[in-house]
Length: 361
Image 1 (spheres, rainbow, N blue to C red):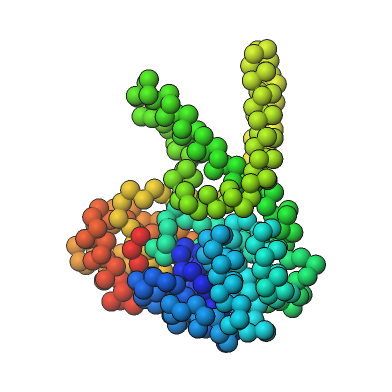
Image 2: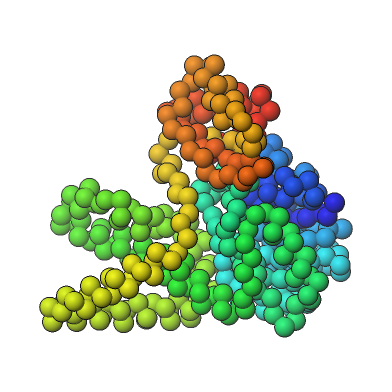
């Protein structure tokens, strides 16, 4: 079995561990500074082994994943560079790539492969982890002319085992593309929320009128500010570039409105609709307004019935249930919602007693 070290057991790191651990092909070592996180990782089978010592954890491993915030990646790399085996491949999951790749290639040379899984959760920490988080998600790898082809092949194999789809681009191309489809939308969400709040100062009922469309488009404004600060800091130029492109479009629409040229606006709308229809649909979750339990179930008849029957036998009511992800032949993840935190805790305990992997959200 290949030995995989994962430094950082947040949403991405723990989900990665769950997916790889479930294959039976890897011995996954979870590394985190938080003792409670390490214990939860063991309980939910995200890892086979835990340690709070990053230098000890990366020794004698085949692959090291740096699943820490983007501005922490280089700092951790400095700490572990003398402990990582020369044969090991090092990769990361950072949201921006150019600065990370340049820095880590100086430390690990051809054995470093930049990576960025294009998936996530509205939750933070290991509570947001999901074995099927990477299923059918795009996982970007950013090899350069210095990258060892064998190292790249190793990372491709490991990533493919999570169920993700691999896309290889240069670090520079990656940063420009995510600036357009990820970083700019966050900037817009923040701007829209602040604009709406300004209107609400004089018209207090404004936010009451916010329908699903407004909530959807501003959802990412609820993300961690510290994480986004790091992203803005490491991809500043590209964000400025796409922001200026957007302003040009807004100015064109403003001119069309001033000139009452509504046909020009409709043309832009039609083009936007046609292009958006090309984007693959994804399963959408529901807002965490209830107390949730995530449970992994096998792909076999009656699995969902076994889960619901076990909970029903205790008299606990499931107020909502959702199949979050499913992988034919292997299983999937159910999201169960309960009215109270006590009911959710009891349901988790019952499911664990029956042998299911279950955790609170």
